[in-house]
Image (cartoon, rainbow, N blue to C red; front, side, top):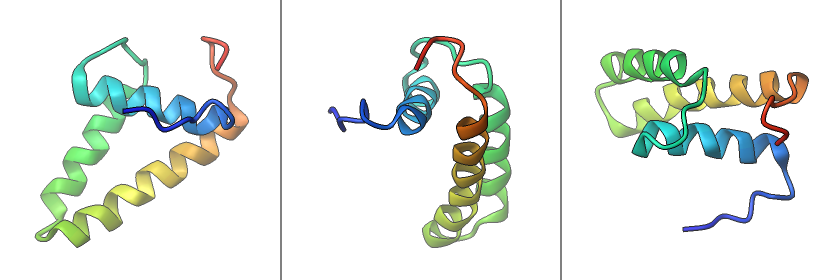
Length: 75
């Protein structure tokens, strides 16, 4: 499914990361670190709502970092 993220390079970059985590597609260097953080969120959470809240922090911070760090793949 497409989400038309082309207009927002930061979200597009996060989309590539999520795709790599989800399907093991094109490798993304920071995927292993993000997976480790999400594993911690899963361990800490006892409900889906808690997991969403914990995971949201990771992706919010990643978004901020990506705003400051251009993608090496040009996106």
